[in-house]
Image 1 (cartoon, rainbow, N blue to C red):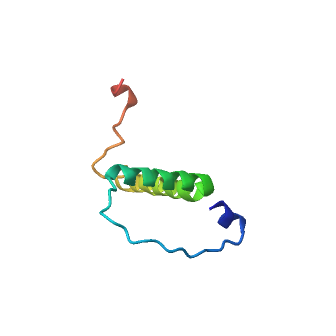
Image 2 (image 1 turned 90 degrees about the vertical axis):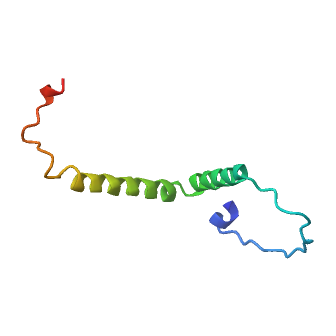
Image 3 (image 1 turned 45 degrees about the vertical axis):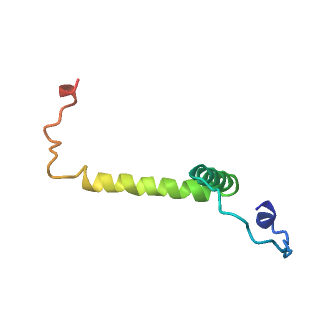
Length: 86
């Protein structure tokens, strides 16, 4: 990944591999480990791309809450008094 991001030329060398004998032994734990590795690579090489999308999605979630729930006609903020809660 570092060579790709730095603009270095990367050549691929074809290899020959034998057919796999037996069946796969991949478990759910391996999938979680793989996702953790992808997350680490994402935070290392493009943190703004990862955390930017998360923050924008939380912004729109809060905006939708504000526009739908907070301005609902069921809520009456005219008679709301903070000292009633204390």
